[in-house]
Image 1 (cartoon, rainbow, N blue to C red):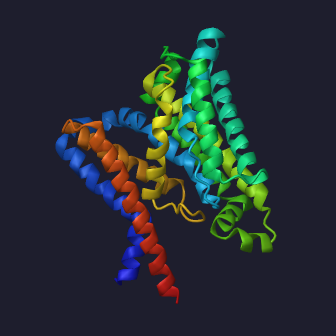
Image 2 (cartoon, rainbow, N blue to C red; image 1 turned 45 degrees about the horizontal axis):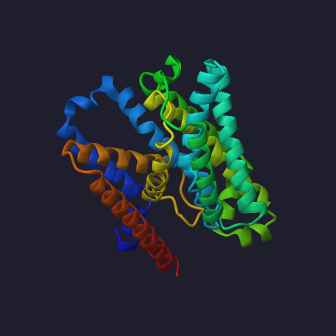
Length: 316
């Protein structure tokens, strides 16, 4: 195997997969009882909000033009607050047939708003979504000044026995989208929007739908977050933003767009979750966790850059 081939593999999903195996082995050695088959549902429920946040961040990033949506975490927190404080406690709504569509609709609307900023108004995506981040963080605190609860029993069950259901539906929807022309257009736009425009691809529509999909998946991640904490907390959502972006980069998704997918983002999120578990076992401080997240992000970006250079040299 040549050095260029090795870099290409390590720079993409291969590096995240190898790291997953290593971290899983470390966790099994540290706490084997926690990873028994009967506890897999609970473990997935614990990891689900982070996986959901990483998956939600991916479509906008794949669309290119610096499409990093930093408002995914606050979107999750806003959905969490509205579901519990407004719909459950104030309006007495507890049916999944109403709460689930409400969460997805809220997410889609917020994603569409970001899409307008990025594609219609042509504001730099990270700047536009930073504005959305600040607005949503403030509105969430207005709606919910302090943590309240509880969540309906069926929703809390999504963090246990039924934890696979919301993530499974998200990946099913993505699998269906991959069979449509929109997916090919998305990857083309993310790789080179000028070439895509020359080929007749509707760049604005493709990129707008990517932001809408990011919002829709953020709404689903908000449901996963609500299921995990079993209540509403105005401060917990924004914490997922930067960790999710780290997971996406670690999973081999190019932050420049046009390369990667949801599977890689999910594996990257699992890597970070297992790293959290291993470090928590040693009672390390949150400062050490932050250092670890930063190191992971830098390493992932460096590997992606090396992969790109190696690929360019191999085609030269």
